[in-house]
Length: 138
Length: 131
Image (tube, rainbow over all chains, first blue to last red; front, side, top):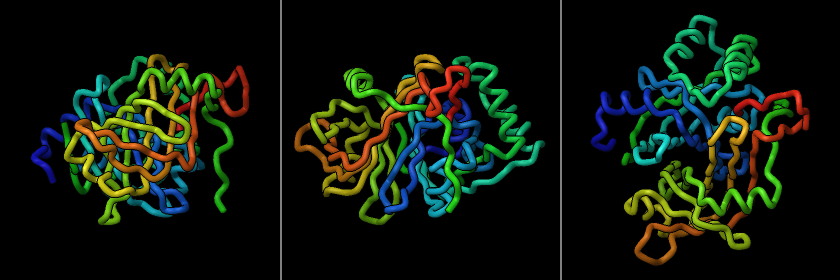
């Protein structure tokens, strides 16, 4: 663990949502995805993704993951890693996590609503990366 | 075998990819380290020449992970507007390039692009969603 203390990490990960999530593909090679995080709480970094997406298949086969979260201008960043859990959240958790997520003005309301609806229907799932280590930050 | 999603973002044309890379997009690179664990770090793609993608990583100390050639993946994107989201994912062996700057050369074994300008089903009425 680097000198990024938990308070600073929490603050950074709650304010910045540009992320690159990496796991291993079926051949065991690193593969990554540009993502937006939803929030960070209790050492868990949350994403919403399609349940049938390729990344879900990879992560279910091997839950080890690494992630870079950056500020929009790229000046600040954190590299973390841990293991993920993929699950269909209950409506209460969907509401709680989405309420914690910072509004993204570039995402149309219609898309945000569709994401929420598809979480409720199960077409989307939560990815929760349980952060075990902060590898570096800048 | 689980059924994979069929919709979602489309891909960039070759010309769009060239233009996208010319802007030196930022993202991250991840390597499967000597210890067998994944290590990710910020990176900016500098160029693509044939099958070689060069990227500058944000931290010289972390770049030492590439002193020996290892399996890696670089991802870069741009998000000026929602409809203009696009990016590239390149996988392959990568090694640090000799020099002062922390630059890595990745030999592309597999590349994929994504673009929200079109979705895979080419439906103009459907708005692409994030993966």
